[in-house]
Length: 159
Ligand code: ADP
Image (cartoon, rainbow, N blue to C red; front, side, top):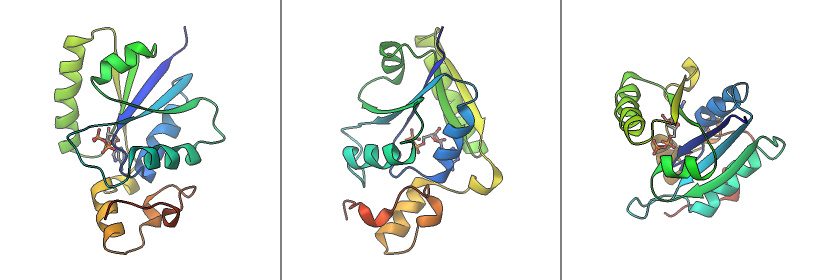
């Protein structure tokens, strides 16, 4: 059976931290779907299409990675796409507590789906999309925090 994982997130924008988690997870799964959450209640800086385009560029040479978006429950999305694993990244104890609650609830409502966590490398532990957005909004250079395939000047955010 193919081992398919979903890596869900806002990715507003996709950072080197996210990229690191996905590349390391490739040894564990046959396919990874990076699923951008379209949350109608949460206003994003980059549009859904822009976020998907950015991520597509990063993995354009990796046939085992698919980019998509979804609305609704993440576990429903996983089932719909035959994914038995939900991939998440961990930076800090705060991430752990947040992720623990979500993963345990997901396990209750969808026992067939396993959450899998990868601990980030120390150099990515303080990389965070909120801070990256603040740098971009303020006209600073955030290029060192996003994958080299993403040229931030090519994308317009919602200022
Ligand atoms: P969400 O809104 O779902 O938290 P994010 O885009 O902020 O979406 O994060 C998606 C996933 O990536 C989460 O599991 C988060 O903990 C993880 N993540 C975010 N930044 C990093 C990083 N620098 N290193 C490792 N994992 C990260």
